[in-house]
Image 1: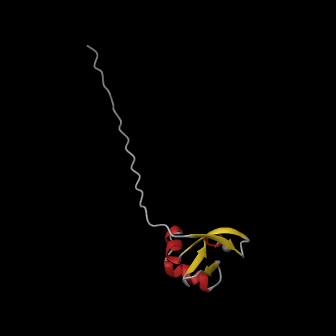
Image 2: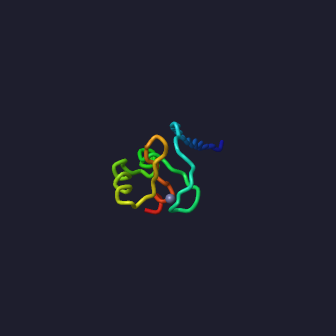
Image 3: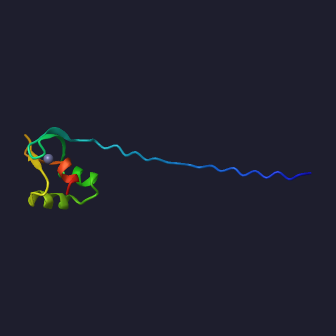
Length: 84
Ligand SMILES: [Zn+2]
């Protein structure tokens, strides 16, 4: 009697989605000359895998675009941040 051998492969894949309250602004950036997404520095740091201090450093060096809105909190232009 012939011996039948079966191999069964089970692949598993797990995706973790962490939802956070997303807070950003779509507004016109005068330096990019188009509508862009602007994020608070901490959120911009999270999105670009940098430290928040690095984002503030880039802002102080005028290497990224940012602007203040009504509540006097800065928002960083994500487009300019991606070009650094
Ligand atoms: Zn910009």
